[in-house]
Amino acid sequence: MSEVCSNMRPPQSNGDLSFINTTQTQWRDVPQETIKYAPKEETILLSGGLTILQDKLIQSALQSLGENYISIPNPDFESFQKGKAFGNRGQCNPTYFTVGNLVKYLQKLRDEKGLSSEEIVRKYVYITAGGCGPCRFGMYITEYKKALRDAGFDGLRITSFDHDKGIFQGDEIDDGILNFTPHFFITLTKAVIIGDIMNILGYKMRPYEVEVGSVDAAMKQCEDLVSEAFLEKKSLVKTLWKCRRVLEEVKLDRLQPKAKVMVMGEFWAAMTEGDGNYNLHRFLESEGAECIPQPIINRLLLNLWEAERAVHKRENLQVEDANKIDFSSVKTRVLIKLGKAAIKTHFALYAKAIGLHDYEIPDMDKLARLGQEYYTLDCDGGEGHLEVAHLIESVKENISHLVISVKPFGCMPSSSVSDGVQSLVTSRFPEANFLAIETSGEGAANFYSRVQMALFKAKQSAKEEFENLTLPEEIPDRIHNYLYQPKSEKAGTASQLVASLEERRL
Ligand code: SF4
Image (tube, rainbow, N blue to C red; front, side):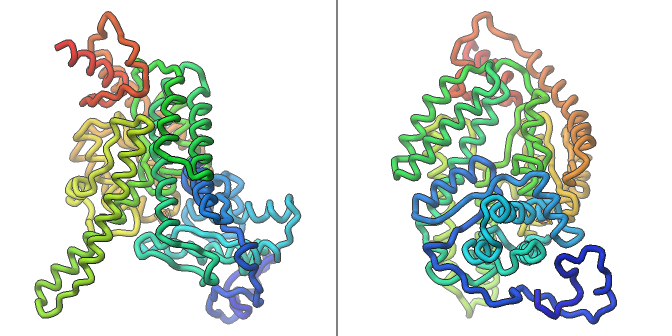
């Protein structure tokens, strides 16, 4: 903020309203004093905000490249309160959680580790996601800067990956400090993909563990193995093969008819594993459900799909105006195809190694066909048509017993889809068990009680589905091995397993 900007509350003056009648000036994202930033060898990169496992794997992956990088811990309620205290009014819930989480981390460095604010500002750089779109996403950097200034860290450098245009929004960082080479992005993507695969397996196994905590303990062992493989540059495929042995040791009882619940909605709110969505995934598991999470690669594939569509549209315009053919789109098209192929190949390779056999990478063209009648395909920058498409796909292909869409308080795009467009979808697919639920950071009791109500119906559906099948007299042991993942038209895991035995008898 510029020194003369008078239309914002100055730091340390809560309750002082004298600024209201002063002449309004313009917000500027520049620190009040010139700062001499630390050289690369003293600079520490901070980021975070994906799932807990992914944040840890990314830290190991980037440290293996020699980056001085730290993933900051998952946001919690305290982060949210700090976001509210130092942020602008009327922000969406993910903004408060993520902005407040950075403030909380820096305050801990200052108050518990004894670093001065000046030293923190000089040495740390925060990397976040940025972008455009019909929401506050494009304003995140400004929000961070405003909160940091008010919290006493004015001038801390922030930069972002713009999800659809490459780098950057935010501060210009001196050459050499950020090493965003193709190798950097490939390593980062590998960590994200492995994290997705392990998360999917964790959610498939945890509800059926015989000994409480055994899946988490096995996953922790796998996380350590993969982190070590990144740091010591060992083969990731061989390491994931080792993880398979660790996971096979976990005793499961998979013939329990549990409701399968797809969790989707606004990207951050649906993906985070903590107070940001009231620990929704763990709550569902404690209530006897199995979750289908949304992997991060969905979002990567959506971004590539949107980029490809934009190229298509540009090329069509050029055909109409045939004198101006731009061959640069050929290069873009090739890069997009390579990007898609790399994600899919790595996912398939790693999934096979650790033993995730039945997961199909989302088909973005199919999802676009499903969603286009209800939501324009031209609106990118968020989940776009995906939320609608996931619900329709779940109903048509019997993927889950309940679909929960998490919409953050204060999020207009998410609310307009979850409350507006999805009402039309559910009226056309009355068999859908769909719950759009708001996360405000507070009001957990109301949130949980609404989830429980929708879950009651889902549990009944899962039970009925299971009871309509005939259990064979002899149950083979392989049923309880996580590696046995038969394809089936049933939604529930237990029903899928029994149906697969029936099919083999016929
Ligand atoms: S989609 Fe909604 S919740 Fe997410 S950043 Fe945009 S406004 Fe905030």
